[in-house]
Picture 1 (tube, one colour):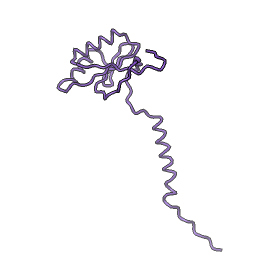
Picture 2: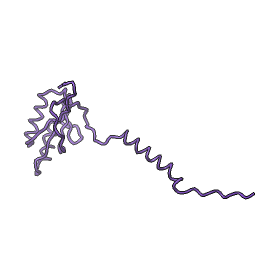
Picture 3: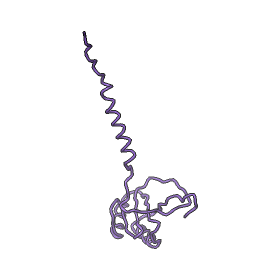
Picture 4: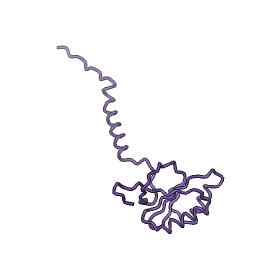
Length: 138
Protein backbone atom coordinates (compact mmCIF):
# COMPACT_ATOMS: atom_id res chain seq x y z
CA UNK A 1 0.00 0.00 0.00
CA UNK A 2 1.37 3.36 -1.08
CA UNK A 3 0.68 6.42 0.99
CA UNK A 4 0.56 9.77 -0.64
CA UNK A 5 2.99 12.25 0.87
CA UNK A 6 1.20 15.06 2.71
CA UNK A 7 0.43 17.90 0.43
CA UNK A 8 2.30 21.08 1.43
CA UNK A 9 -0.01 23.89 2.51
CA UNK A 10 0.03 26.97 0.42
CA UNK A 11 1.23 30.26 1.89
CA UNK A 12 -2.28 31.68 1.66
CA UNK A 13 -3.70 29.03 3.97
CA UNK A 14 -1.09 29.73 6.63
CA UNK A 15 -1.49 33.52 6.67
CA UNK A 16 -5.31 33.64 6.65
CA UNK A 17 -5.73 33.28 10.46
CA UNK A 18 -3.20 36.09 10.98
CA UNK A 19 -5.17 38.38 8.66
CA UNK A 20 -8.37 37.60 10.56
CA UNK A 21 -6.76 38.48 13.89
CA UNK A 22 -5.34 41.73 12.51
CA UNK A 23 -8.74 42.82 11.20
CA UNK A 24 -10.41 41.98 14.51
CA UNK A 25 -7.81 44.04 16.39
CA UNK A 26 -8.27 46.92 13.96
CA UNK A 27 -12.03 46.93 14.51
CA UNK A 28 -11.58 46.72 18.29
CA UNK A 29 -9.21 49.70 18.42
CA UNK A 30 -11.41 51.74 16.09
CA UNK A 31 -14.36 51.24 18.43
CA UNK A 32 -12.48 51.57 21.70
CA UNK A 33 -10.10 54.41 20.87
CA UNK A 34 -10.51 58.16 20.80
CA UNK A 35 -9.10 60.21 17.96
CA UNK A 36 -9.56 63.68 19.46
CA UNK A 37 -7.57 65.01 22.36
CA UNK A 38 -9.67 65.53 25.46
CA UNK A 39 -9.84 68.77 27.40
CA UNK A 40 -7.99 68.80 30.73
CA UNK A 41 -11.17 70.11 32.40
CA UNK A 42 -14.59 68.50 31.99
CA UNK A 43 -17.00 71.09 30.53
CA UNK A 44 -20.56 71.02 29.24
CA UNK A 45 -20.79 73.84 26.65
CA UNK A 46 -23.97 75.93 26.44
CA UNK A 47 -26.59 75.16 23.80
CA UNK A 48 -26.98 77.35 20.72
CA UNK A 49 -29.98 77.77 18.47
CA UNK A 50 -27.81 78.73 15.49
CA UNK A 51 -25.67 76.16 13.77
CA UNK A 52 -22.46 77.41 12.21
CA UNK A 53 -19.68 75.51 10.55
CA UNK A 54 -16.84 74.75 12.92
CA UNK A 55 -13.59 76.07 11.52
CA UNK A 56 -10.05 75.05 12.35
CA UNK A 57 -9.14 76.21 15.85
CA UNK A 58 -5.80 77.66 16.72
CA UNK A 59 -6.15 78.74 20.36
CA UNK A 60 -8.71 77.13 22.67
CA UNK A 61 -9.27 78.30 26.23
CA UNK A 62 -11.40 75.96 28.37
CA UNK A 63 -13.32 77.34 31.36
CA UNK A 64 -14.89 74.99 33.92
CA UNK A 65 -18.06 75.69 35.90
CA UNK A 66 -15.98 76.50 38.98
CA UNK A 67 -13.83 79.04 37.09
CA UNK A 68 -10.75 76.91 36.48
CA UNK A 69 -8.98 77.64 33.18
CA UNK A 70 -7.04 75.43 30.79
CA UNK A 71 -4.88 76.46 27.85
CA UNK A 72 -2.76 74.16 25.66
CA UNK A 73 -3.81 71.17 27.74
CA UNK A 74 -2.63 72.67 31.04
CA UNK A 75 -4.65 74.09 33.92
CA UNK A 76 -3.49 77.69 34.50
CA UNK A 77 -4.55 80.84 36.33
CA UNK A 78 -5.66 84.16 34.83
CA UNK A 79 -2.24 85.86 34.94
CA UNK A 80 -0.57 82.90 33.26
CA UNK A 81 -3.36 82.85 30.65
CA UNK A 82 -2.78 86.51 29.80
CA UNK A 83 0.97 85.94 29.42
CA UNK A 84 0.59 82.72 27.40
CA UNK A 85 -1.95 84.17 24.98
CA UNK A 86 0.09 87.37 24.51
CA UNK A 87 3.17 85.25 23.77
CA UNK A 88 1.31 83.13 21.20
CA UNK A 89 -0.13 86.20 19.48
CA UNK A 90 3.18 88.03 19.29
CA UNK A 91 4.56 88.43 15.78
CA UNK A 92 1.97 86.28 14.02
CA UNK A 93 -1.04 86.95 11.89
CA UNK A 94 -4.22 87.21 13.97
CA UNK A 95 -5.15 83.75 15.21
CA UNK A 96 -8.63 82.50 15.94
CA UNK A 97 -9.27 82.30 19.67
CA UNK A 98 -12.04 80.09 21.00
CA UNK A 99 -13.50 80.12 24.51
CA UNK A 100 -15.10 76.84 25.55
CA UNK A 101 -16.94 77.66 28.77
CA UNK A 102 -19.12 75.32 30.79
CA UNK A 103 -22.83 76.11 30.55
CA UNK A 104 -22.99 76.30 34.36
CA UNK A 105 -20.14 78.85 34.60
CA UNK A 106 -21.01 82.32 35.82
CA UNK A 107 -21.45 84.74 32.93
CA UNK A 108 -19.48 87.43 34.78
CA UNK A 109 -16.52 85.04 35.05
CA UNK A 110 -16.69 84.41 31.29
CA UNK A 111 -16.82 88.17 30.63
CA UNK A 112 -13.79 88.66 32.90
CA UNK A 113 -11.87 86.06 30.86
CA UNK A 114 -12.91 87.82 27.66
CA UNK A 115 -11.53 91.09 29.07
CA UNK A 116 -8.26 89.37 29.97
CA UNK A 117 -8.00 88.01 26.43
CA UNK A 118 -8.73 91.46 24.96
CA UNK A 119 -5.95 92.96 27.10
CA UNK A 120 -3.62 90.19 25.87
CA UNK A 121 -4.23 91.31 22.27
CA UNK A 122 -7.05 89.07 21.08
CA UNK A 123 -9.06 90.88 18.42
CA UNK A 124 -11.60 88.18 17.55
CA UNK A 125 -13.00 85.69 20.04
CA UNK A 126 -15.63 83.02 19.47
CA UNK A 127 -17.60 81.23 22.15
CA UNK A 128 -17.93 77.50 21.49
CA UNK A 129 -21.43 76.08 21.91
CA UNK A 130 -23.22 72.89 20.97
CA UNK A 131 -26.41 72.87 18.87
CA UNK A 132 -29.63 72.91 20.86
CA UNK A 133 -31.65 69.69 20.91
CA UNK A 134 -34.91 69.20 19.03
CA UNK A 135 -36.91 70.13 22.13
CA UNK A 136 -35.76 73.76 21.82
CA UNK A 137 -33.82 73.80 25.09
CA UNK A 138 -31.44 76.69 25.17
